[in-house]
Length: 325
Ligand SMILES: [Zn+2]
Image 1 (tube, protein in one colour):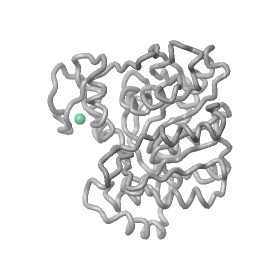
Image 2 (cartoon, rainbow, N blue to C red):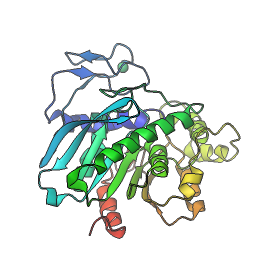
Image 3 (cartoon, rainbow, N blue to C red):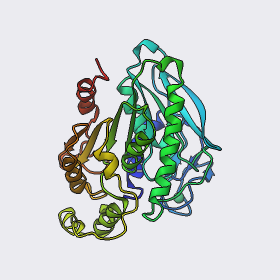
Image 4 (cartoon, protein in one colour):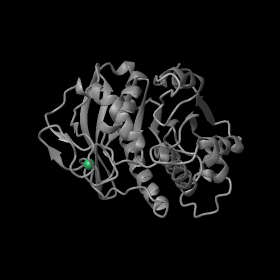
């Protein structure tokens, strides 16, 4: 899956963010090279990866108080922002936003932060380990390091959940996790380590191993470089016998946390059909699958050109599991 999700979501939401309180500094979007730390005083192109620089923004949400916060996983300090409604009686719950594979700051996941605020949640979003103001070392995805790296990221997420649970206005709130792509591996792993999560919403995540995912992505070229069609890659994936790296199957089979999965039928970035099949084979009622016909990795309906509004599916689901009353 590499880095596509964050990059494309960026394009869709830069305009939105450009309307917000941005500074006049610029940086490279999350990309496959280590150039996101450099700051520029003017718009232009990143000299390393040639991508268009994006403004550094300081997104605000109407009706929400915003504060910068820090929390620790062992000796690593992670930096984030906490958005919470001024009207505390309006809080419908609290969520942590979880990153995809790209080197993402809290601003880079603002698509999900905004969506969570639309749903009435208090929101904690943070800079991924080694990115933005968070300490530690960022790692690009690799199958060989996937088990160690995902466990580290899940521990960071547990620290974020613990921070949220300590906020006095959230004492009676249900706590959830929202994120896409790589977050689909990290979030269930975190619930395996913490019993403080009530629900999860996973956008275009993977329910099979890192090795299978990487194999599929190489076959399709993630839809960006030359690759074979999704249907052919699905067939070849059935014969995969390589090193699996991190495999979430056992955790997902026993998953106690109510989970809503979104899958687009035209997503070449992750093995959608194999992931749906695996979830169905678990026969675990805590998993709910929402198919987005013609949807791509960024929830775009590739037939109509319109982006799906995920909240229209999420609201009734939250009602069905008792988070909304
Ligand atoms: Zn760059």
